[in-house]
Amino acid sequence: MKHITLETERLLIRPFTLADVDGVFEFASNKFCQQHTGNDVITSRDAAQDLIENVWLKDYAEFGYGRFAVIHKTDNKIIGFNSIKFLKDIQATDLGYRFLPEYWGKGIATEASKSILKFAFEDKKLAEVIATVYPENSASTAVLKKLGFQHIETKTYPEETTTLDWYSLKTTNYEG
Image (cartoon, rainbow, N blue to C red):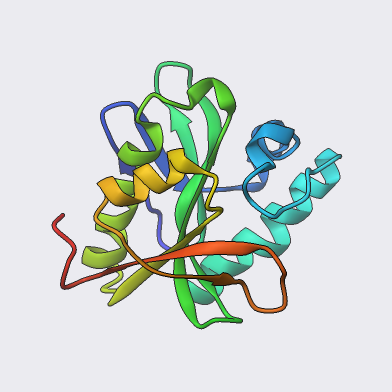
């Protein structure tokens, strides 16, 4: 995959590397980061390395994108991820983000996602990006609405039982 670095006023956004294990472990082992995701808390650095190596790096190789590290410039620290990810089981590209709780409520998700969506629509030429959110996660719902996503339905993810709100942003509605 070619070197990609996205930059906003406060953030650097780039693909993960194996050198990011400690940063991934910090946010992926945080129960608050995982509470609205459907993912389990990671309990070891080996599990964080496995996630980088066997999921994210493979996504980059196969699709040219995947979950990207978000580095807070002031702290020079990985604070989570934000990116698009191709979901094979539903044949759609999903916007996702996860941040350490001390960075919540500061506009980080919106700022990073604007950069990611520009990458998705302008560089990758995607026709649509979807997002799913737990109905009780009002903060993420507000972020999606700020970004221009439209609610399309409420249903479970395939082979799961939890109900999610499904959102869509098509290139025709993307305003950059």
